[in-house]
Amino acid sequence: MQFFPVGKVYDFMGPRWYFIGASFLLVVASLVMLVYPGPKLGTDFAGGTEVEIAFEKPVTPDQIRDAVEQAGLSRPDVIRVQDLKNPQHYLIRVQDVSTIGEDVQRAVEKRLCLGETSGSSCAQAASEVKFSPGGEKITIRYEVEPDLAAVRAAVTGVAGIELRAGENNPSLQNARDHRVEVALMGKSDQIMAAFQQRLPEGATPEAALRTEWVGPKVGAQLRDSAIKSVAITLLLILVYVAFRFDLRFAPGGILALAHDAIGTLGILMMLGKEFNLTTVAAILTIVGFSVSDTVVVYDRVRENLSKVRGATFGDLINLSISEMLGRTVLTSGTVLMAILCFFIWGTGVLKDFALSMTIGLILGMYSSVYVALPLTEWLDRAFFQKAKGQKA
Image 1 (tube, rainbow, N blue to C red):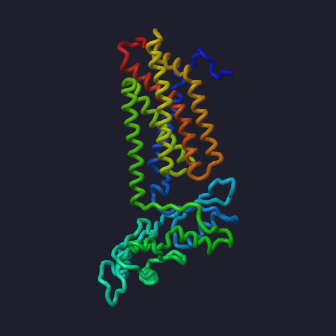
Image 2 (image 1 turned 60 degrees about the vertical axis):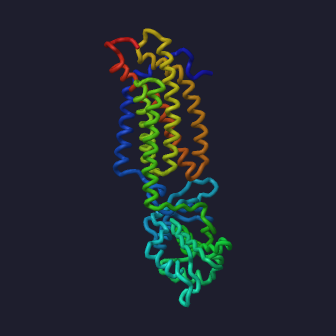
Image 3 (image 1 turned 90 degrees about the vertical axis):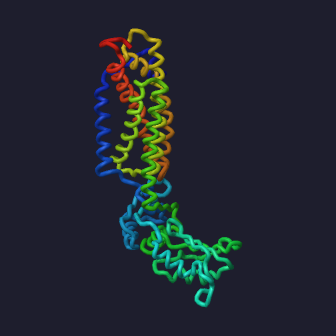
């Protein structure tokens, strides 16, 4: 059975202005939403602490939010994760990060007698003290075997320092160079402790499924790098298409890619989704798939330019798309079916990636026909034909 009979030519260029108008509205609306109210940035870009947890008893988002706020953490976002195995699967995100201020760091170093000579007031002096960027760990080195009880007393004597519960804290990590590690109470630990204290008994598991943190400065750097990576990708593809075919094809190809990227972001914002590194990965994948589909159609148009005589460039586009339509639908449809499986049965980041890919694949198939080629036809008619009405 053939969905698209061989030899039949469809008129794709006839209704192109309706689709161009729809694409224009989608892109303009997406750009407006990117400016105001702006994308909803995830932890990757906005910074903060993120905890993914599967509760063992039914709890409500209001209970989770109240427990986090009572623990002194501000602006918690509670997101229910679609999980068929556990309906009590949540993602909790706060904008707080377990950073240790410079004043606290200097106080810890003073209590540990960093760089001082052992004397009556300092039984042991640390030779090196390092603080983790996330503020959840202190690494201390000594010249001799340290007294862990003395290390614990020195660190806990500083205001603003709270050790993570556990018998082996501090712990000797390397006996050869006398390296001691002190685990501190981080924001994720505070969240878990708040749940154990304030939620129904037995609802909170012993450990979270996943914990992540990103500092505000790192988040800003990641956001800028993501924007640059997408912009550089579009520029390089523009150069590739211009050399691969000729100048008239390049603007249409790059416009289609920009349409797919901006349109996908706009639809995700309409659905209330976040913009994070997963979204950037999906956008770059969409751009790669879309340019591949566009180049295949472009190649058939260029091939028909030398085979078909006496036809306008618009007729050649209709013929080329009709010849490649079956291939495009089957290829993209196969990929789409695989992506939909991840969307239906996946959870968390995998589900968000599959949703972005699904939107991008559909826009990629559409833009190859009604964004890239109409612009190419207009450029040919406006700049490449020597006289009005001349054949391609």
